Image 1 (cartoon, one colour):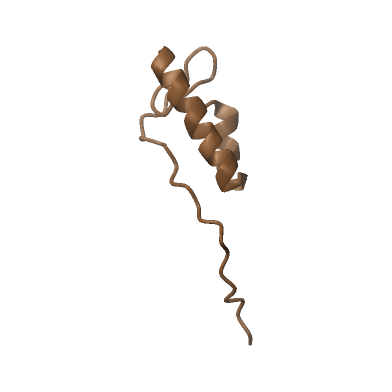
Image 2 (cartoon, rainbow, N blue to C red):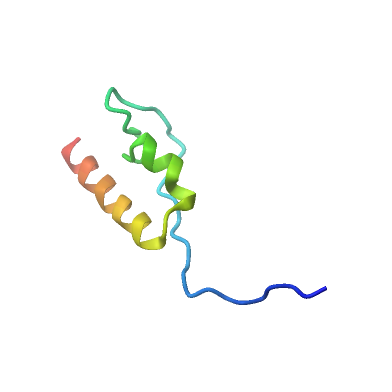
Length: 64
């Protein structure tokens, strides 16, 4: 049996989850400041998409 040992150049970004999950009235987590849609889609996102979400979350946190 042959195993696929091909390495990818894309490394995964660590989730910004801080294990303080609670959604506000706009469905934004008050722990990591991601939207519920962003949280649900995280594992299917590319690294570039994940980094963009992290930037959006940082901006939301500053506005909070």
